[in-house]
Image (tube, rainbow, N blue to C red; front, side):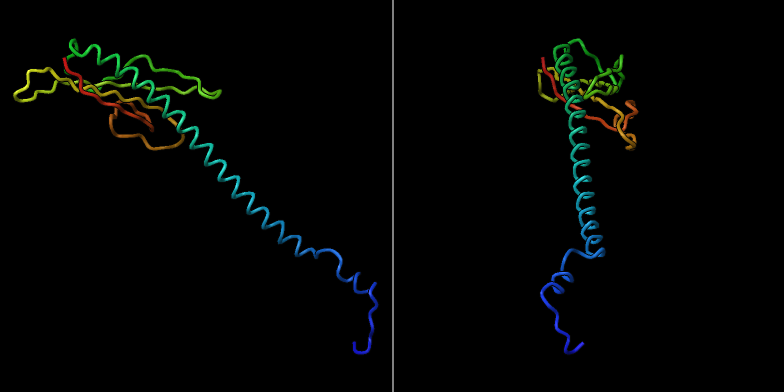
Length: 153
């Protein structure tokens, strides 16, 4: 349109606001960023919950291991055995069942007058859809921690 002269009011009318396509692209970018942040937050919450359960299992294993260290002179060789009862622990409004197993065996060392015993304690719990762990299979859980020590007397 040669020769057409636009005044300032006509130019302003054409340049006001965003087009629908620009708004939709901006919303799409915002949605992708928001979903990414939400996924990151969920991953952090899951990791925090896993750590809470692992800390509780370690506390239970350590308490039982300390009890057994004091009883070392009276213990005899024993393969993995479940400890009864299973422990129900309330963590963050939910109840988690922990299963414990112990094993102890005498250690014979050449040229040693000390009596030595290795004591192992494993604590397991079920969480999510993870596969069952193989060692010790007696726990039958998909998460576990274990502690081991050597006691002498």
